[in-house]
Image (tube, rainbow, N blue to C red; front, side, top):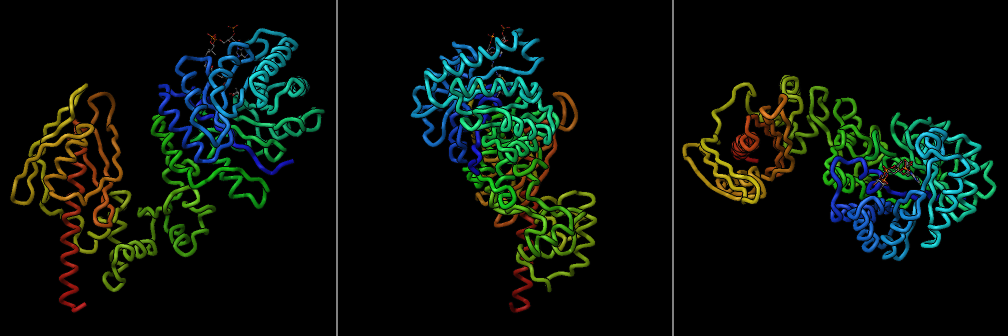
Amino acid sequence: MTNQVKIFDTTLRDGEQALPASLSAKEKLQIALALERLGVDIIEAGFPVSSPGDFKSVQLIAREIKNATVCGLARAVKADIDACGQALSVADHFRIHTFIATSEIHVGAKLRKSQDEVVEMAVAAVKHARQYTDDVEFSCEDAGRTHIDYLCKMVEAAINAGATTVNIPDTVGYTTPTEFGGIITNLYNRVPNIDKATISVHCHNDLGLAVANSLAAVEAGARQVECTLNGIGERAGNCSLEEIAMILQTRQAMLGLSTNINSTEISRSSKLVSQLCNMPVQANKAIVGANAFSHSSGIHQDGVLKAQNTYEIMTPESVGINKNNLNLTSRSGRHVIKHRLTELGYKTEDYDLEAIYKSFLQLADTKGTVYDYDLEALLFFDQQKHEEAYYKLTYLQANSGHEIIPSATVRLQVGEAEVTRTAIGNGPVDAAYEAIMQILGHQDVNVVDFKLDSKGEGADALAQVSVIAQYRGRRFHGLGLATDIVEAGVNALIFVLNNTHIADQIDQQKNQQERVAGV
Ligand SMILES: CC(=O)SCCNC(=O)CCNC(=O)[C@H](O)C(C)(C)COP(=O)(O)OP(=O)(O)OC[C@H]1O[C@@H](n2cnc3c(N)ncnc32)[C@H](O)[C@@H]1OP(=O)(O)O
Ligand SMILES: CC(C)C(=O)C(=O)O
């Protein structure tokens, strides 16, 4: 048996069928191209009979994708298989995936057929699909709840009819890893022609076991895993591609299995799916969550600074993230404060670590995360005494709507002067930010993160904007609150600007001190 596990991605079929809004053909193609770069073996592009739009998307993907097999789903119904065959025929090589449910509850209550009739439908479907291609996959829907005798009979019949891949789905995420691995072992022991097909698994996450069940199945001999990016899919979703791929990669020495996945493409592919599908990824999600490579507590940060693998079983670079993140919070210790200050260019003799650490803890207890500027300000200013703001908003007007070019006029008090600028943008916030950048007269402030939250319920809730900006090698954080979204965004940027202004003052002060000291 091969040690290679095929990765069958169904983000565009099972993932997409659970989205509140369908993806356009162009968006689906964008995801398919990302999947191709990621190295998936099979892309399930859709269910062509379900709508003309899906038919066209599958056809477009079949035409464009060259380095993965494109596949379409069909019920055990002639018209579905014909739609699949027609949509996919533009591809050099394609797969038809046909399925029918096998569990007692699905056969009786949903299909309202006898078990024998369902076997006949499956056999006829596989034979019909074989007229289009020699790459036919057959799935026993709800296999996880199917009696093992009937499942063995169905798998044998499908392989005899010409299925080259037989998929064993845990459609409702009901099984546990030992149980599911046992089903695969049973099939290997009892189905006489099993060596003529690749055994695949397709696990859902209703009990949070989709990845664990898929892993148990490959340990029992399955050689294809069906999965989706970020684990999106019906209800609680599917086995997550990034998790199963990184398990097989990280634990390769123990498992002895490999895939064709280029793991360094994982992070950006995940972000693309999250953005296009409008499905945010939870921060603590394995592999692709914002915190997956962040360390927040002092003991961990100290460990990682001394040797990365004390708390990292895989590197952020291996999944396409540049660097791990050491969050400065009230759970951080002296080692990481010293490390960050060194990164910011301060020598240990420039500051009293104990004194800084004490003020840092006070600030972190009230503020949460402490950013670079906050930390530097502790070196020079007492945080509690806020200076008069250098930049103040004195006027804001934003125009946006359907079929008008968004524009904004912003007037800022800059020290003693008042400056007004009007600009256009791709939305009112973008226009207002552009007007502010024009007022600044330079583009050094680069907004790298913009998050909008509503504080309260209903349409009159307050908008809170959190902005992270990069300015001359440092990260600055700003918060803005207002009933108006644009004003909240502008306030957040002005918060950042006032901090960059103080940082510039700090730099000047440092330079002056260095000159006096003759450095
Ligand atoms: C577990 C899974 O994820 S399966 C894939 C789920 N994906 C989808 O459903 C894709 C989107 N679906 C659709 O566009 C539509 O449901 C269609 C086009 C497939 C069918 O639409 P309709 O013909 O209007 O039927 P509807 O969806 O209401 O009912 C499903 C019918 O298919 C039958 N059916 C369900 N699965 C199968 C199957 N694998 N093979 C044959 N018939 C099936 C059902 O018994 C029901 O038949 P009935 O009308 O005789 O009662
Ligand atoms: C069609 C099959 C593979 C499916 O999506 C399921 O059983 O969940």
